[in-house]
Amino acid sequence: MKKIIDLRIWKATKDDAYRIAEISSEVAKEGMVKELNSSELMKIFSSEKYYVAVAGLNKEVVGYAMSTYSWGKLHILDIAVDRSRRRMGIGKMLIKHLISHALEKGLPVVYCEVGAKNIPALNLFTSLGFKFKIFSPLVAGGFYGLYLPIRKS
Ligand SMILES: CC(C)(COP(=O)(O)OP(=O)(O)OC[C@H]1O[C@@H](n2cnc3c(N)ncnc32)[C@H](O)[C@@H]1OP(=O)(O)O)[C@@H](O)C(=O)NCCC(=O)NCCS
Image 1: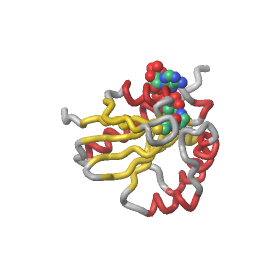
Image 2: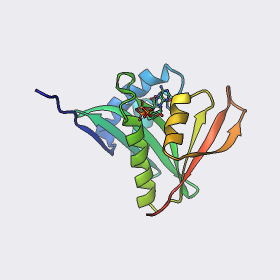
Image 3: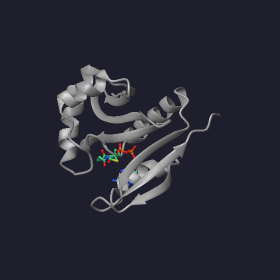
Image 4: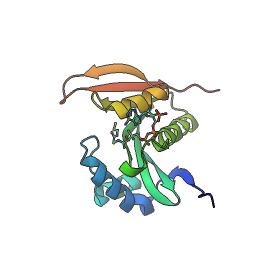
């Protein structure tokens, strides 16, 4: 019988914090995202300044994307997908969800910063139409600031 894969994205709640902490701990070892502990996550979930989305595959959380409202834009702070679940379109679905959220909130721009050597993340954002805005050489390896103007259709 064919296996049904149920992939869903939803606004994260405190119930998802433990799994987000687990994924961030694993993915942080690759050096591209910061490890988030449970108390940091509780603060994030208690604040109106943040919006976090999670991806669930057959009900198990396998990725998250974290954002904050900043100076009239939605600033993506982090995205991470469980290593064993990559290249399945999950990262793209998470970012599309944040773009829809920015649209709902009437924010004109989605912004993110990506390490200059992080080819998977740079490809992910540019494949969704993000444009290079700045390059900062100040941190190790440098990073790009990428932005996406939101167009109402
Ligand atoms: C970046 C990351 C979130 C992508 O997640 P993902 O679920 O694998 O991404 P998707 O499957 O949606 O891929 C979307 C596109 O991104 C690009 N991409 C993703 N992984 C890539 C890789 N390893 N090499 C090159 N391009 C890649 C491709 O353009 C891909 O489209 P395609 O599969 O049609 O070619 C994931 O690799 C990750 O968690 N990395 C570690 C954490 C990290 O670097 N976060 C970013 C911090 S700014």
